[in-house]
Every structure is written in structure tokens, then in C-alpha cells.
Figure 1 (cartoon, rainbow, N blue to C red):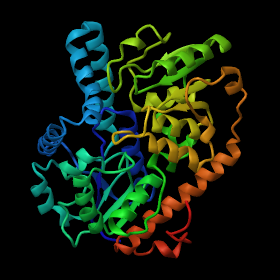
Figure 2 (figure 1 turned 60 degrees about the vertical axis):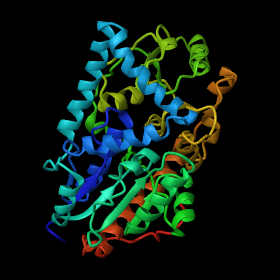
Figure 3 (figure 1 turned 120 degrees about the vertical axis):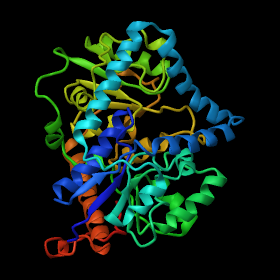
Figure 4 (figure 1 turned 180 degrees about the horizontal axis):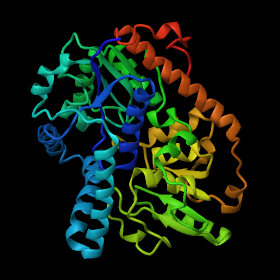
Length: 411
């Protein structure tokens, strides 16, 4: 085994529950494999990346779908200055929880002040691994960091469960993706739609593997949570990122039937005025670990989030998932929800919000069957990464103790 470390290119710094948890799970995977790794520090590269993203969004300023998608960010930023001290303090507290998690849970590399400086140091690492999350969105392709284009040809490049986030790429980004995808020594994606994109752009047959958060069962995730309940009474947990009032109305009807209080994490992606007064409890001292804890202890989970759905599955919860977007247009990320639920055969958990509450309460989930499916996908993913590291010359002895599932096997 080489003495060099793996370089992980992840979105560990983003103040988003799914982003930080999948980045942590990626690191945990290699820690448990006893493979030395570091997560590449974003601090010195952030300005360069952001400038490229800004140029991309300016080029799309006349595209109505892009404007609608980014309007949420504008609303969130504006709210900081217009909604008063209590709101500012609440958002600052949540931001501090994310900052604490990123500073204490990750093995962070030294600071690189540009992608060129990182490229010059690339040979100090055994391989670069990019993933998971929506790192190949069009804006990220333009930013040209998660593409691994800065990594020299002779340094192994591996994509682990990376997501395009959308079902199809615009023409310009598709052309760029075709080039960087061909440079990857090993490529895997998180969704069936991503598998289709790679096939169309490169002709490559690649596997669909699971999001890193799925690699660990609930008992292992308990390692980052506290045993005591965050909320002391039975509750309905809501984590909605989209602004869809009909979904909140569905939860209200559920509350009427169950008598349980509503706990909601508010204003995560945007400020949503109609959410004010909707829940009974609105905690802000919630970082990634507390997020997992809130799902773990909930009676029911209601969400339009991929990772909230994932942790509901891992913890065997009664949950309902809703579409964040009303259509599957160019900026829609509904595809990952479809893919996740289809992988475990729970398509009926994807609701429109006009369903009969009593009928929904009667819906059953066979978690013995579901967790068997997750374990199969989990093992398939682990075999993929071991094979990639072996063929990259990193794990020279892993085959002595491992029986490999063929990488082309159905996931």
C-alpha cells in the first residue's frame, strides 16, 4: 500500500445538512478501511470557484428557470437584513453549528491558494476522489473544480456516487462534461439519470452506487448523535426546502389526526414567509448531528429532501417524501428522489400532498426487506471503491481478503 494519502474533493464546507453528512460519510468510509485520507481545504480556492459560478449565472440571467432557482438565494440573503435581530441571531446560530461540524469532524488538508497550486501538489496524493452530492450541476461544471480537470493525467481520478443533480445538461456544459468524464479513471454516479448522461456523452457503462450516507447503518450513525431526545414529546418532523404550502397543509391534517406537535427546520434554502407560525417548534441549534437525531426520534418525517429521506430509511421511520419542484425542468432535482425510492421499491411514499391522511397512515413499510436491499447496495458500493483503489495501485493486497461483485452488476 502506498504511503500517500487519498485526496477527497467534497462539499464539506457547505452549510447544508446533506452536503456535510455525505462528505463526512465519504471520509468515514476510508477511515473504516484504514486508508489515510484528507479532505482538500476549500478556503484558498473558494474565491476562484465563486467567480466562475457568478459568470455562469450572469450568462443565464435571461433564463427564467435559472432566475427562479436563484431567487430563493436572493430572498434568503435579503431576509438577513430585513427580518430583525431574532431572525439574524437564529440564522447565525445555525451557521455556527455547521461551522463547528466542518471544523471538528474532517481531516482537512493544507490551504491551496489556487487550483494551479493544488495541481502542482497533486502528485503528493495517491488519488483524487470526487463525490458525492450534486457536484456536477452546470454551475459546478463551469467552476471546474469538482471536474478534477486540475489533476494531472497520471494521478488516478475516481468519482464516487457523484450527481449531476438534474436529468439533462445544457449543451455547453454537456460538451465540457464529455471531456472531463473521459479523464476519470473510475466513474460511478448516484442516480440512474446520471448513468444515462454519462452513457450518452461518453459511451461509458458505469455503475450506479449509493450515496455515502447509505454506507452506514443507523447504529453507526448513532456515533455522532446524543442518546437523549432533542425534543421530549412525540413529534412530526418537517424538513422542507421548497416553498410548497400544500405540503404544509398535508402535515397540518396529519397533526389533527395524531395530536403530535410539528417540529420544523425553517428557512434552510430560502426565507419562506408562509412557514412562520406553521410548526410548534423551530429549533435553530441544529447541526448535522442534531439533524440525524431529529429524524431518529420522530414519529413521522415529512420532507422534500434526498438526505432526509435517506436517514428516514436508515432509521426505519414512517416517512413521506414530496417533490420540491412542480415539474422536472432543467433546474429540477426531483430525479434523485425518484431514483432513491425506486431503488428500495417505495415509490408510493412520493406524495402529491392531496392524498387522504388516514389512508397514508395505514401505509406499511417492510423494513426488513428494505434494509436487505440497502445492505446489498452498500456492499456493491464498497466493492466498487475497493476495486478502483486496487486498480489504481493503492490497495495492493485487498483482493486477498475480498470477494468482488462485478462492477457491471445491477444495483
